[in-house]
Length: 336
Image (tube, rainbow, N blue to C red; front, side, top):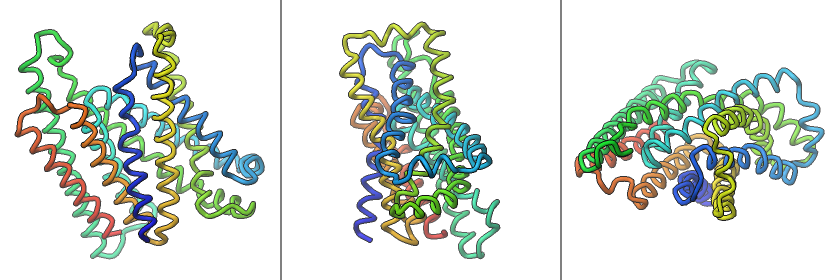
């Protein structure tokens, strides 16, 4: 149990800091940084990890039914759009709000989806889950309000016409919420693909936790297709291909590779943590994972001075929103 908890915390920290190196790239536009990131995290890292970790890799996926590929592919396509919007939200509103609002939305919807598939739970569990969802929703609203106040504070001290005075906070929050809604496609793809992939993985002598790596392979590959099309179009539209020739390319590549590995490894490590936690892995473990992620992202945003110009009121709303999210996640876990 202790090992599983520590692994879940570590996975959450990894996910919470994966986007931090983006702040330190030089000479890259948004499209350069995130197109390279998605190329690595959606294709290169999953392919290498899957081929190394999954015994019988070729047979498992070569024999996977076409209908299953279609179902997982379509859901993963939506997830890919959601994650892509997440990256845009981070670019607009920073790590703190980008992570917490996106993940809060995922938790909000993800907690309701099982009701559509499995029906309503017993009354006590239902009351706890719905209560937790309301607390998470309150946290999202408070953090959204904190973001709008921060933008107002920054605009008050910024020169007219500057980016800080431009008013991107509302747009960024909206993108994060919509991205979170679409990203729940991951849960559906996981639910649809896990039974076959678990059985096939076990048949080839793999450990239980390897099933998670197998499930992530078609999800990441399918999700990466939409991102390739999107960024290919915008790199051409903004004539940003030439920015890859910057003298800082080598250091940028290493920073973005760090992002890609941490993004993928966080999911894989959580899957292992859930396996170690047994029956409580997908409830308590998931709560620990997301709580660690949100707290890490908030701390990262503060350390990198995202909130240095924000008023005391804005910061208090941010902290209250984080507290509500943490409490809500734990209540939902208890209900489950």
